[in-house]
Amino acid sequence: MTTNVLGYAAKSAKEDLVPFRFERRDARPDDVVIEILYCGVCHSDLHTARNDWGWTTYPIVPGHEVIGRVVGVGAGVTRFKPGDAVGVGCMVDSCQQCETCESGEEQYCDGAVYTYGGQDRHDHSKTQGGYSEKIVVSDKFVLRIPDGLDLKGAAPLLCAGITTWSPLRHWKAGPGSRVAVVGLGGLGHMGLKLAKALGAEVTLFTRSKGKEEDARRLGADHIVISADPAQMAAVSGRFNLIIDTVPYIHDLNPYMPALAKDGTLVLVGYLGALDPFLNTTPMVLRRKSVAGSLIGGIKETQELLDFCGQHGITSDVEVIPMQDINAAYERMLKSDVKYRFVIDMATLKAR
Ligand SMILES: NC(=O)c1ccc[n+]([C@@H]2O[C@H](COP(=O)([O-])OP(=O)(O)OC[C@H]3O[C@@H](n4cnc5c(N)ncnc54)[C@H](OP(=O)(O)O)[C@@H]3O)[C@@H](O)[C@H]2O)c1
Ligand SMILES: [Zn+2]
Ligand SMILES: [Zn+2]
Image 1 (cartoon, rainbow, N blue to C red):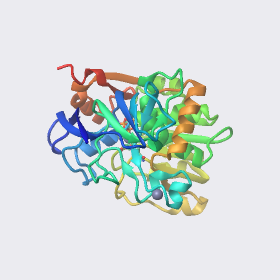
Image 2: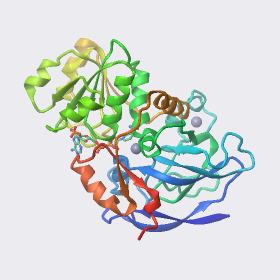
Image 3: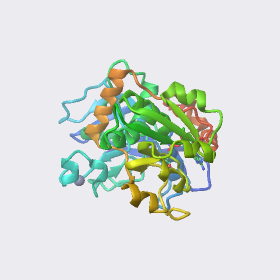
C-alpha cells in the first residue's frame, strides 16, 4: 500500500523544480514514517536536478538533509516513537551484510541506496528525497537529533556536516594539526566549525574577497585568497589536511605545495577528470596524497550529531519557502549562500 504525497521535483535538466505528487510506501515493520519539517539544500541537489553527473532519472525529488518528527513506526521498531525529532541524510539503505556495512561505512557499500534517485531493495521503487511533506525510511538509517539543537540548523549536519566530519576524523584532525578548507559554502562552513571544535588550527582558502569576517566567526584562524600567489606561497608546506569542497573542475596544483610532508588533500566536491593534469612532483618529494571521501556512515553521523549537541554546533542557515528553491539554486551557483539554504517544509502547501 502507498500514500500520495506532495513534493517538488525537477522533470528535466532544463526545467525549474515544480510541485509534484508521488507515492510513498506505507510503513514496513522496520520503517519510520517522518513528517518533514526542514530540508537543507545541498549543491548535490542542484547537480542532480541539472544532471551534471549524467545519471539523473526524472522526475527527481531532491533533498538529503531531512529533519522531521516521527508520526508513525512499523511493528518492529523500538528505537523511535511518534513525536521524536529525527534526521535522514544521503542514504536510506545498504546491503547490511558486507564488510563495509559491518564496519559502519555503509556509504561505501555496493548496495547503498541513496535517499533520492536510488532503488528500494525490496519493492524496486525509485527513492525520492526530502523536498516533500513526508518520508518513510528503515529505522537503521534514521538519526536521532539531540535535545536542544535547533532543528533548522541541524538539517545541514546530515550531509554538509558529515561530509566534512568524516575526513576530519579519518585523517585525525585535532590539537596540533593544521587543517585547511577550500571554498566557503555549505560544506566549507561546516568544515571550519568542526575542525575548530576538534581543536585543529584552521585555514580557509577562498576565491571570494569579502568572506573574511564570516570565516573568522565560523572558526578560521587564517584566510588565504587562492588567486593571490603571494598568499599561496606564504602557506607552503603548512597543512596536514586540506578538504576541497569546490563543486566544479579546478586546478589542484596550487594547493599541493601547501601540504606538509605526509599531508593529504581530500576531494569532497568535484567529481570527474582533472584539468590541467596533476603535477606529481610535490607529492613524490614529500609523500603527499590526494584522496576522495563520501559522506559518512550512520554510526559516524550519529557521533557527529551527538558531538554537535554537546558543543552547540549547528549550521548557519537562511530559511526559505519551498517556492524559492529555483532562485536559491541560482544564488548557490554564484556562491551567494550564507551558508546553507534550508527549506521550511510548512510552506510546501502555501500556494
Ligand atoms: N563527497 C560527498 O560526500 C559530498 C557531499 C555533499 C556535497 N558534495 C559536493 O560538494 C560540493 C560542494 O557542495 P556545497 O553544498 O558546499 O556547495 P556550495 O554551498 O555551493 O559551496 C561551494 C563553494 O565552493 C567555492 N567555489 C569555487 N569555485 C566555484 C564555482 N565555480 N562555482 C561555485 N562555487 C565555487 C565557493 O566558495 P568561495 O566563494 O569561498 O570560493 C562556494 O561557496 C558539491 O559539488 C557537492 O555536490 C559532496
Ligand atoms: Zn549533500
Ligand atoms: Zn553492504
